[in-house]
Amino acid sequence: MNKRIVLLISLVAATVLLAGCTEFNEPISGNSEGFWNEFVVWPLVSVITYFKGLLGTYGLGIIAVTIIIRLVLLPLMVKQTRSSKRMQEVQPKLKELQAKYKSKDAVTQQKYQQEMMALFQENGVNPMAGCLPVLIQMPILIGFYHAISRMNNTPSIDLGSFLIFPLAEPSIILAVIAGLMQFVVLRTGPAMDNPQMKIMMYFMPVMIIGFGVVLPSALTLYWVIGNIISLIQNLVIYKPWEKKEPVPAAPMAGARKEVKQPVKTKAKAGGAKK
Image (cartoon, rainbow, N blue to C red; front, side):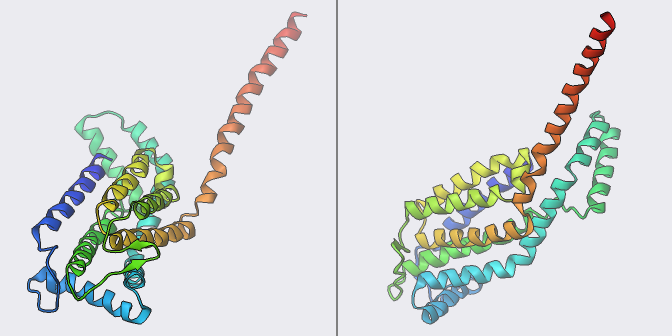
């Protein structure tokens, strides 16, 4: 868990650093020089503008590009979700290994690591699968931020509005919607069964709301649409409604057996005294 938090903080810091290292408040055009401009920012601007011409508004153009990006990333996201699901399924066996190798000496911990990796391989679990989609999405998210910011600073481009939200300006309402959508996505995913990941349910939505109240609504719109796609993916693959039914049933049945046994014993003892 600590490694994941460090990774997340590092990615956020990298986002802020990259956002400040390039000319995000300068106009953008096909003549803009530099690797980042030529291969990331301008292609995104061009695709958004293309779909704006087809669909009529930049808001719909951003939605179309978001859907395309998420469809391209879908195999990775599906792999991540399935790996997380398998990780939850092996948690009982993993706890058994932790109890078996609870000693902290080097030899014991080495055996624990070996058996843990063997357990992961047998069940098709990749502990790093959850990090790869995040690492791939960060440059896209940064590129979106630069594309929207520079489109907003280009006199020939008017981002306009999507529904009631001016795309060039921050929107608290849209930021809250994005944060709530992120919470629902995490609540329906593997984090809901993992106590160590439950902190992410509150940290990630708050972080998104914090960014959303200062960044252009166009970028927040990307988060909202992306989270809708992630929610559909969780419902199809993870099936959270199936996880809730069996969990309370097992302890309740065990509790009844424990209560019945001492009652019978007391009854026999009482009969013997009479």
